[in-house]
Image (cartoon, rainbow, N blue to C red):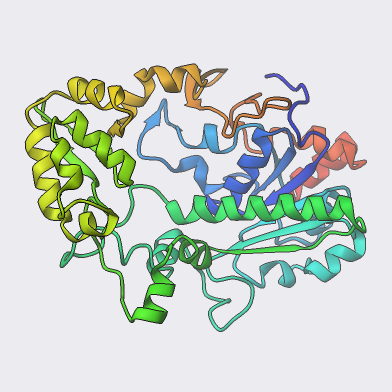
Length: 402
């Protein structure tokens, strides 16, 4: 396990309190770029994410290794006064706190932002929750499935007149985490630029999902239009859909800009379509999207994916296959960008994990180690820095504080 410092966030210490995905994914992003992320876990069981994932290898979760990579695991019983004192000592020396408890939990433990800023004025407090820290729904628990539904993105997902399906991942959690990371970095910049004091970053799953709805609000406000699901494409945007291929796949073609559509017509040997009144501009193509999609499908289903790709590449048309994870692992573009990393680990041997995003030219991110399998594996290292002797730690362990 490498412990070398790296990345633009080296020297930044963040305490991660919380579990599952929305809060911990914030810590993951910061840890990827060199922040020292100390994850507080419940003694014994640890974060439930240690047990989550669709499949297991040798009895171990395959989600935990990548979600907790580069993090240090420290166990503290937050329901005990002594445990809360330990966390306060950690926070007194930290740059940031990440928490995704139900609003009011920190306050119940005597660790409200006001109290924490008394012991560390520079602390940036990232609070991730279902509905935010204020408002009539603030005290309700909330997960990604609820945030996606109430935030509107599930309403427009799927096909007309069918139950709106969920995405195949916890999109609301990771999306909110990205907004929270953005907030942390802005707060860190403001702190360093101005008065050296921290602030609160309040990120809600519902609001993060709502923020992705593009023009749905303004269209409703001025036109009274409630956007509905549009299946595999986007309403009034054409051609931008999936089309069948000869080898029984589907290809995505996105040629809705006028110059791009003209090039698509050339690739299909249908140059006359570019001046056809039905398809002559963006609005016309949107109004006649179904007809246009059928015509393009008639062309794509006579060719293999490879042949379609070659023709569209030759004409500068945006296209792509719908990749499975197997396809991604074998994709030369992903490989060349180091997006499939193989990390040596004592539990898994060599394990493929997603690479670092984004790529920084001067201070790139890195994966030093995968999520620690032992709950509290960094207890001695971190607690010793706080002045707890080996005897102190044994006593805390015996009393089930750590």
